[in-house]
Length: 233
Image (cartoon, rainbow, N blue to C red; front, side, top):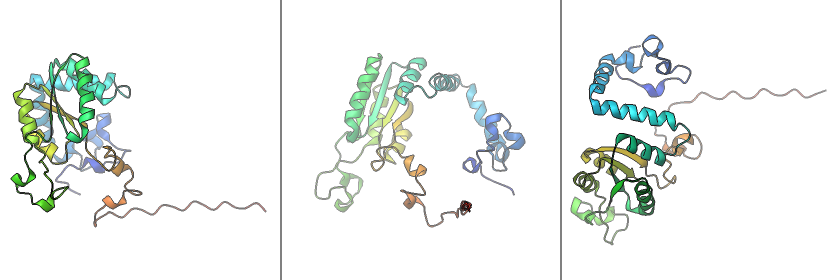
């Protein structure tokens, strides 16, 4: 079978040849090394850029030294220190402003200067972007739009060297990344239902959260029934 797109998500855990440096030799047909080696070469050439190389090196060192020891907050602190950043930015959901306050104080305790902007900055009513009253969370009340573009521009203009996204809504985070000039990372991915732990929907996809499947859900192989235990005579 000939593949036109890479599909790493389908690679069996028993293969994952890239982890052994053998992708070209025994990777599946959909392996990026086989489907599109030209793009792998192009991507590799980008590491000739000094800043890109430094980010890759610092990231790998932080990963190795803190592997299964450091929390993501600690990783952010270590990464920022080793990159030589002085001023960090927080782009937070206003619903997580208490957590943003704690994060800001933690970063300041490590000597960083911190600028932070909540999602409702500008207090612009949702009607101004074309929403109808019935499309708001609370119809009949003033409801400001989330404003990730302004969050990004504010952090840009106030000198943030490294942005930390804290619980921005889906799509709003995408706009933030589109307009942010500096490097950005995610500390919290918003999922109100799962306590901001979205991976739980994947881990429980065939039990509590089976509703996430669409109408084209693939068939699963039936599990073998356990063999009956012969009763003693």
